[in-house]
Length: 428
Ligand code: NAP
Ligand code: HSE
Image (cartoon, rainbow, N blue to C red; front, side, top):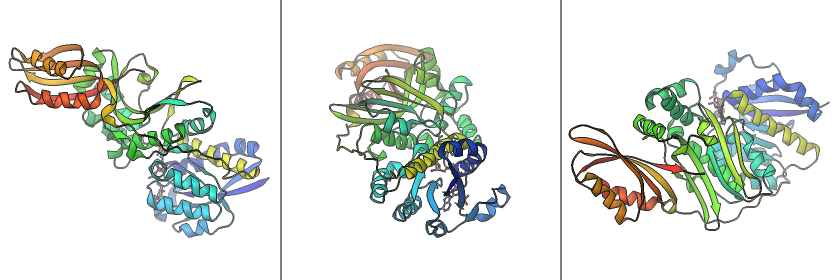
């Protein structure tokens, strides 16, 4: 049986998952490929950390990337380190030395995916990155291959496990935002610095990658308008539940004749929608194609073995391509596309305001909406004291820019203490 030598760049959660998966499923994989996959090198920064890890004796740990790139036996490199710049330099060197690369690194792909794909093709090698979006869910290959007979119209993802865990546990267990985030960190879902999770930037990178493939357009995460979940409160969760909704952090990409819109933000979604039932740290991606209709992919978006499942399937795909002499042969088409201004996006909104409990307040607020031609779906006065009341308003679908301007005018009213929340309602 032929042997293919592989190097791992990184031996953290995902790297160790790859080693364990190849131990567990080595015989299933060999049977399909008629090839033995041998991990020869593993690159880390701190050798001491890995002394007790009990790695298979055939693996050599190194801190020097040149050991790997200069080894002619290594045909495939799995980049599972994270960060963008160092990883990019390593991958470029691999390509120019004729080595194919698979990567789980969404930060890198969202910024440099297209130039790296071009460089891999110029060097007749593969570049694959199934694990970069939604961990174990096979969404990259679906977008790139299985759905490529469709015009993709909409992609809606719950693609950050940390924020889904936080929102699910605020809803189901009444936890505070801070307590739920602490649990997500303790369970290992959150990044070492959870800012990119809660601020929506992790989901923005993932939707940029999917939209690039689905819409055949050169998109980076800077094209995505991003709002995180930091401002969502327990009051919003309770009101959503009472109104028949749940709050989720959604990454939404849609494409029509006017261009592409790309947004990440918390949203009210009806309890009956399949995305509303995605709980805990699970991920899901809802896709609408013009022929296939609506699809939903669901599964574990993070964790050692689910993510390794995607990394190893990429490695297997590269081996098959080597066997067929077709690495680097897949053509990609990228169109220049107009990215719509987020101001023009339209959605119904849930709004929560803290106001004076006094005559004329409701008419002042509804007057602002009327002057801006925004129609009110419902307006409820909630908790009140002798001096202060909470108003919850649902407005019909309106352009984001107009809603923001109306809220500025409402905040200026002397009877309004503050506009506490403005969350879009998603109707798909
Ligand atoms: P991790 O646990 O922090 O492990 C990172 C590994 O890379 C460590 O072994 C680290 O070595 C090594 N490393 C980092 N920078 C290095 C450098 N400059 N030189 C040499 N080695 C370096 O990270 P992870 O959770 O496995 O994530 C790896 C990648 O997969 C990231 O791109 C992440 O976004 C992506 N991903 C992760 C998950 C998940 O569930 N964790 C899911 C999907 C995608 P030292 O320990 O010696 O520093
Ligand atoms: N921090 C990420 C999440 C890990 O919470 O989904 C997977 O990319």
